[in-house]
Length: 344
Image 1 (cartoon, rainbow, N blue to C red):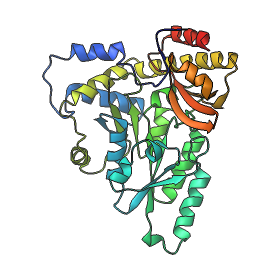
Image 2: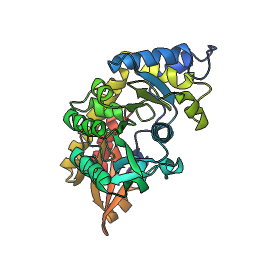
Image 3: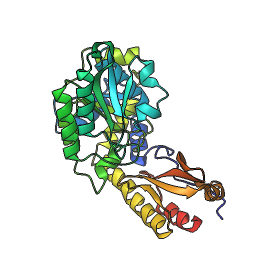
Image 4: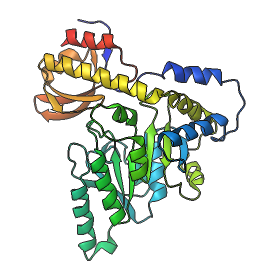
C-alpha cells in the first residue's frame, strides 16, 4: 500500500507548465499597459487568431470558466431569453446557478452521451414556437455546449455543423465552452479543429486553467464582439487590471504549438490509464476519447482506495456502486500510471 497519494482528481490541481512560468518570470519586471492592452496580450491574441484561421476575430482574456460563461451569456442574451444546454451541461449542474443569478434561465435538454443533439434541439425550438403562449415564456436565445462534454465525449464536425444550422434557422447563438478544449483538439478521435469551431460558433473560449496555465481563458468572438463588451466585463467584476497575467500565459501556450503538445501528453496518459483499468477488469461508465475517464467501482472498494487515490465523485450508479472520474492532464507523470496499476 502506498503512503503517498496518487492524484487523478482533476486536470487543474497542478500549477502551470514550466514554459508558462518561465515566460511570466522573464516578463515580470516589465512595466506594461493595464487591462489587456499590453504587448503580450496583443501578441497572444494575434497568435490565437492565426490558430483559428480567423484574423478578424476579437479575443479577450478572462480569469476562469464560470466567470467567462456568465459574462458571455449575460451579454449576448436579451433579458427575456434563456440558454439551451444539455441537462448534464456545466452551466446546468456545476456553476451554482451563476447563469440564473445573472437573470437568464438555463433551458435543459436531455443529453446524448453529454451532447446536445441537433434533432432534439430543432424539435424543442419548434415546439416552443408552436405553443400559442410562447410570448409568456422564456425564449431560447442561445445554445451552450462544451467540447469535451462533462462525460469527456466529443462533438464531430458534422454534429457541430448541424447544431450551427439549427441555431441560424431560429436566430439563436451558438456558444462553446472550451475549458478543456486543448484535450479535445489533441484527441486521436476528433475531426474538429480550432478553425472549424471559429467558423461554426458565435463565441467560444480556449481554456487555459485546465490546460497548462495558472489561470485564465481566452474568449473568442469570430465575427466580432458585441458593442461595449469590455464595459460588460467590467460590470461583472471580471476585468483584470494586470491583464498581462493572462496574456503572457497564452502567449507562451500558443508559441511553438505548446497548447496542442501538452494536450496530446494528457491524451497519451489517458490511453495508458485506460489500458491499465481494462487490464484490471475495471468497468467503464462511458467511453471517453479525452483525458477524463469514468469508471464504476463498488463502494467498499472505494473505501479501501480513497486513502491512496485522489479521484472525483461523479454520481451514484446504484446503492452499492459509484461512478468516479479519473483525469489526466498536461502534468501527469507516467510513473503515476504504474503506481495506479499496483494500487488496483
